[in-house]
Length: 210
Image (cartoon, rainbow, N blue to C red; front, side, top):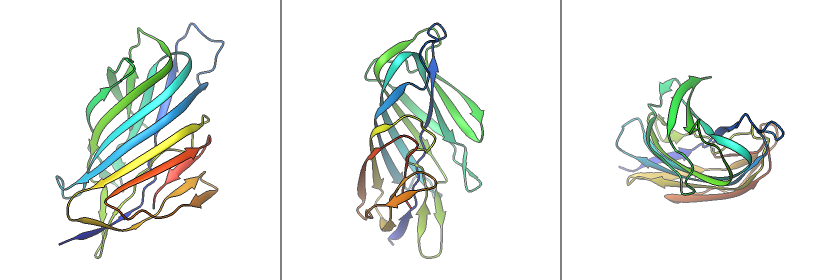
């Protein structure tokens, strides 16, 4: 039996950048997210809905930084997301060791080497799974997830999100919203099993899929 899935996605990306203490002249906020690209694969491994996420973050540090912080929610609608980080890597050679801590209902990944700084163009790939991402209704299932947040003072030059559905799942509604929390615009729906969303976002903007 085919289950219909309604995508309500507002996928939040929260990364705070750690500045080296010896260069106080430049601001820790002085960087650009050149490209945020993510793949979201929904499978049937968990009856409550398991999602495999691969985020690729390309950025440019204009000061010397140790790395990034990536905050991922601990729960969704009262259910634990059971975050499991599978791998963190970097094609630019940035240090990818990490520790975790809890803050404001999130698990924060502190990625980088406290004894090493880097600058310029860097890339990070974060590979993880979360569970309990699906809400079930009588006639359909629903997924709501943040693409990127609205708290960035920096611009996103490019955002791409791809959604891959397991066999037996069929999307009957998918809408994308972009903008701030106050002002947002609606884009065309995506109804394929693999959906691609490409956006150019200014600072303090977000992409939302309900």
